[in-house]
Length: 411
Ligand SMILES: N=CN[C@@H](CCC(=O)O)C(=O)O
Ligand SMILES: [Zn+2]
Image (cartoon, rainbow, N blue to C red):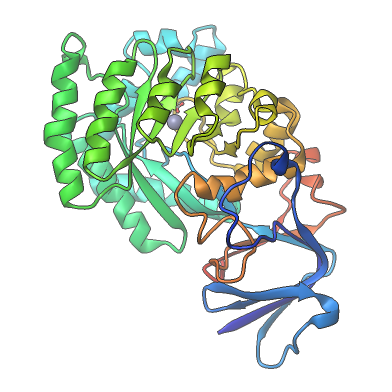
């Protein structure tokens, strides 16, 4: 089954397969091809070029993309899309003056979501999660990471990860699962941190590894959550079980967690709203990808990740949504790209690189996703007729998407 897209005004993010991520100054370059065609065969990109070399339409399915642009589907490397219910009440409390930390200290926040999740059946949780996944696919996301972390009990964490497994089997989007048992300490372990970490390492992890339910391991390394030493225990155990770390760190405070993450070969360090020079030094010459989550900064009014400092230091950066009920109830990568340009002063080229190729790297998927490359998955967005790709951040909030194609099939 082949699909030929012709007369593409601009084919965006065309790369050789050897490029797995872009860093520093390289992020300002977004290779494109004007007046282009793209041939998709089954679920992969077969070839592309300029219209003067366009193959005949013949028996291929055909889309005429006159005036429209084509880019790789978004790669959202950090979400908590599987959750039960919502936290609208806390949103109202914050409007009325409480901070995220104050709400968490009163037993709200992550523990509130954990209570709801443990009272929800697996089927109900799956059905709620399907709706969110379908929504983000329509918004152009073609690869996504989903975390556990609202179970905080053996049964709850396994329930979340089994739901993620069912989503993987049911949808054409690429999904990576991350085990986030170390998201918060359940109330009964508040005075017994090592007891809860023992539960994670000795009870949860072996079952998760046995059932192959997770690809990565995560922890919330933060003041009042998991200390650097506690996070190191989690990372060590994860690495031993074959789960590479992807860690929440530097969201509210800088406590030298980033250096520890690099030491333990973390694939990503995520949030980084508060970054010290020593954090940047720790990331230099490492394979660890920093991930910014501007939707979280926007929603709970905290600083934005200092993208310009990271890029000036020659580091790469990925952008993701952080879709979750507490700090970011939105999985819209288009809005994330716009916020990165508007609030973090990233150029559209940098933001698109961060939300595609570098996002794919942040899920270990850059060999198959994140760029228009012969042999990669045919996951593309066809835009509406737009004057330039700057329309995306400029007309923030407008829907510029005409068609989403995942694994070669139109949604
Ligand atoms: N910071 C930790 N975890 C989530 C928020 C979780 C919640 O509030 O439910 C985040 O990435 O922002
Ligand atoms: Zn998160």
